[in-house]
Image (cartoon, rainbow, N blue to C red):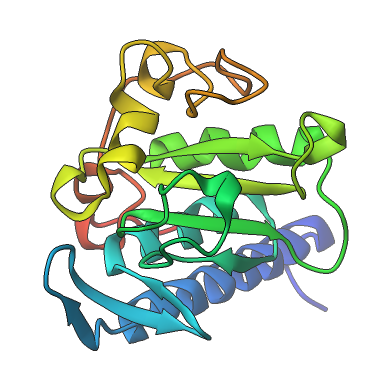
Length: 204
């Protein structure tokens, strides 16, 4: 008979399972490689056919992990003219669209992952969820402090003083929602400085 109470055993097993899950996420981060370089926007790699820079890839992956969400990428960067509603924001890098894998996303799901995204140096703009606008439901992510790799319209979606999310805007100049719609905004950080970045010592 084990000297440990059953609840202690169960707790230890749950912690071990969570560590294994986190280790798998970190392993996927370190496995992702930037294999090409754009003349203007810099290095990037591929997830399927989507092109994404490594900091954006890792930050969004961590946000979804922390929120407990399985997700899939619906649009990466260097995607000029592919989706008119994107208003050129996907022409460069530092951006990514994701949606919940398998089933639709609720507003509670969206708020949770966007909140964690801010801790990872990303602003997530909620699109289409529960009819919030006329788009297909997804989160449009823009990396904070990444001007060098972003198309000007993507950078403006965060920092423009009229409609940028950092200033309480909705992220697109002509968006149906002209004000920020999401969880409370948090102080700005970057993925390089995030407490959840494994290179800064994060472990679950």
